[in-house]
Image (cartoon, rainbow, N blue to C red; front, side):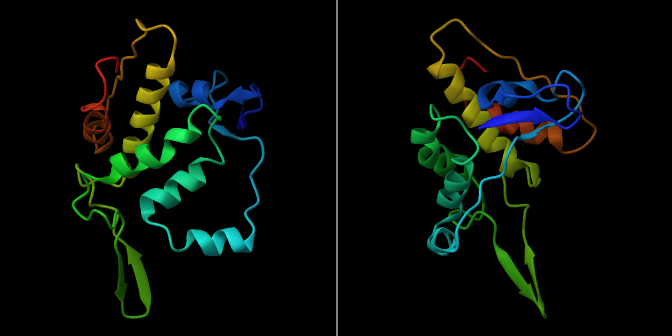
Length: 161
């Protein structure tokens, strides 16, 4: 899967670069260059999966081949510390509407969902890197719940993050 910037200044970017970049060099956000189509039988088969397995199947459409064999394990690990585990995102019916509860992660922020997966993918990419001395620093500045969610997400990763 290749990614492009929303501002059009960068294209054909591989997933590992996107995972470590944040914004594109032109200030845009990275988006997939094409969106995969998922047929009805596949969607129906996915409806029976756990949240972690479903996440792995969806992510497999957007990551590089190097990461795909590890996705099931990464996704299971990413959500195991949610208070609602194994039901990562409980759905509650209130009258005629359904509400997704996105606050069951370790910091009670909806950002726990994406940041836990991202930190594990980053950790895996570092472990797969042939340069065993390579490390990354995560710098977070926030006045809200992003900082605690980001710190919590990387807290139990390898010493290289």
